[in-house]
Amino acid sequence: MKSQSSTTIELKAGERIDDLQRNGYGIIQNPEKFCFGMDAVLLSGFCRIGPEEQVLDIGTGTGIIPILLQAKGKGEHFTGIEIQEESADMARRSVAMNGLADRIEIICDDINHAKELFSQDSFHAVVSNPPYMIASHGLKCEKTPMTIARHEVMCTLDDVIREGSRVLKDKGRFFMVHRPFRMVEVFETFRKYHLEPKRMQLVYPYVDKEPNMVMIEALKGGRSRLSVEKPLIVYQSKGKYTQEITDLYGY
Image (cartoon, rainbow, N blue to C red; front, side, top):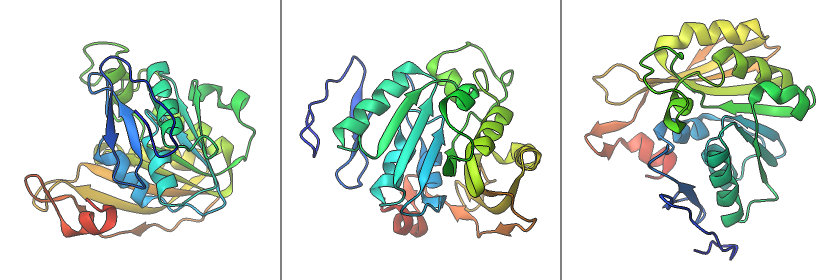
């Protein structure tokens, strides 16, 4: 199959190309392993990235967040780090397919090796959609692609925030999406590593349901002051997005 850059991409068993409805971009995924969700899409919209900034995506998966951010014309260069070789390979091929190799680099490695991979204070912004569940919570099968994406079996919240803070420049921003039930822990860990939560938004699947996501922006070396944005409601009825989601994301 060919992209807008005329790069021929060979799909492997179980893979498909999904249309991102952005700049003609597509993304290679394997639904038998793991596919990106609404959380990654919403986080890409929540991020505030300057046009000349260097950005690191921790746990990039198949590269969805760098590709979506680049499609909006935000950021000069993106680096995605992903521990699973299969996901990193799909991300690299998606980057090539979309003709973005000069804007996005995918590294297959452990975020705990960040000090060997990146110099200190080298990124203007860090983005992460990390595993939400602690390793023991509902864990039945260890180290499958789905388990690694959802559970802290290969890295912890502390790992992600510690290493993200280390590579951030002073006054750099850390953008994260997580689950509300771990919000206190997220805030405490941000502060532990000199990141001050500055902006947050709760995401509700429906107006009458509890929030199932929280998006947070933290500032390295920032002062204590938190701005809470109005709630974001995803669906107005089953299968139908709210007008706000349609306006913001074009779906």
